[in-house]
Image (cartoon, rainbow, N blue to C red; front, side, top):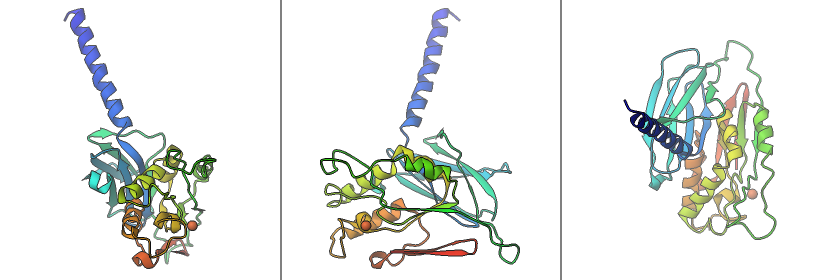
Length: 269
Ligand SMILES: [Fe+2]
């Protein structure tokens, strides 16, 4: 093989490698986020930058049998995929991986979770710690009110991540819809997507299960009530962005019961 041919092949290999890096860096907009994790199921949520084939693989950390599921994300559903990993075993550690259009995605933190233990009638209930948070305003200058931004100091997310809690409860105002957001379906989805994609948030989303209820700023304008005309769209967005097990009774309120150890958290709005 001539030197020129070798150089051409090397450039081609580097070019393919660079394309793969580029495809990987732009593939996921936000997530993966852990939703509810029970004894036998775990929900995993993510949003892709554009329509894509999303594949998830998981296995018990101590085992070797990988299982895979696939979903296609699409513009009409804002490129969100939520997977329910079923038939898991209680009290086990699992790891998972994400492939977008066949390319395995890399993360700076582990993708893993622990199913809830079956302690009933056997041992004392396990100890646990959880985080509660709300009023999550993420700055977005072009559409914020002029002047000093309302959000900021995102380093709190680093502290939350370092707590290594067992789950997080979002108490509402998990995003803040503004004038450019709450008068259209695409505005609502834009704001939800922008908030969820904050880089500092991503390790927190993957590190523990998340449960959410909403408040006025997720639902519509400040202090909005049942007269807000786009409430169907904000409910649709809330359900799409928060893979809860239950959503109460629609617009009459969101409530759910989270059972961990001996504690039942009644989470309502
Ligand atoms: Fe509020």
